[in-house]
Image (tube, rainbow, N blue to C red):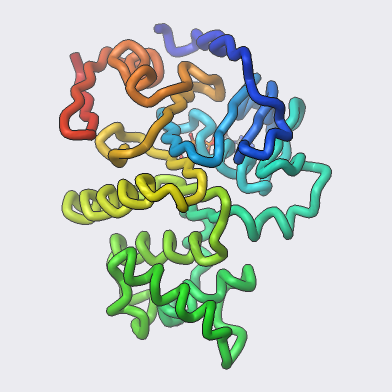
Amino acid sequence: MAHDQLPDPPVVDDLPAADDPDLAVAADHVVVTRSGQHLLRDLTWRVELDERWVVLGPNGAGKTTLINLAAGRTHPTSGTMHVLGERIGRTDLHELRTRVGLSTAALAETIPADEIVRNVVVTAAWSVMGRWKEDYDPGDLARAEALMAQFGVGHLAERLYGTLSEGERKRVQISRALMTDPELLLLDEPAAGLDLGGREDLVGRLARVAADPDSPALVLVTHHVEEIPPNFTHAMLLRQGGVVAAGLLDEVITGDNLSATFGVPLKVSYEDGRFSARAS
Ligand SMILES: Nc1ncnc2c1ncn2[C@@H]1O[C@H](COP(=O)(O)OP(=O)(O)OP(=O)(O)O)[C@@H](O)[C@H]1O
């Protein structure tokens, strides 16, 4: 496909109503325009509460814009966006944000290097960054300890965040994102910058989160099919702000779809729950 040729959005029909209580995200013909540029165009999407989505696409495809929309941090220019039954633009975003766990590079940059790890995690309970209370609620502290243990950073609870490795920081960021027991968890490139061991460790932990029926709805952004954890169920491919394909993971992650998304001929392999891709 030529670089300037954009795919027609896939036809989506028989969608559940946007205010269906089983939906985490409902986007209808969403367009996001900034400085005259379409960051997203005509995006229609449903994420159910028990689904685990991966969003793939090249640099500049609109993935972070989509995550910010789903987190209630960006408004659509046109179309409608519902998150957990609330319409963006017509709801109290502060309240909605406590129901959505978010881990992005931009948020990570706001974590003070001189904060201890336990505080980085537990302060999410009050939607603040940095320590602000001497006495924490024992229930919040217990939850923070459990999450740090789940993500393999329990032994680092007393360490300064700035002294952690990139892989350890990523796992602290996800623990923090889960602190409020969100109904929707949004992870923007959680494996970026990790070495192979760190990536595999994180993929394994996210696979276990995905397999747990008590986990929130999940949306994970990545550039690489190798980073799709087992037990994820759905995928959306974005290119230049448009949807190339969306639906069940194994129907969407194909050589043809990835070639159209990334603009180079690619072939895909699948083994033991994991995908890999290379030039064909
Ligand atoms: N405020 C803005 N004004 C103009 N253009 C913007 C603005 N914010 C983002 N963009 C552009 O919109 C496009 C989509 O950006 P976005 O960050 O959503 O892409 P992405 O898929 O997350 O990219 P990457 O994989 O590189 O992180 C990019 O070309 C970006 O430069």
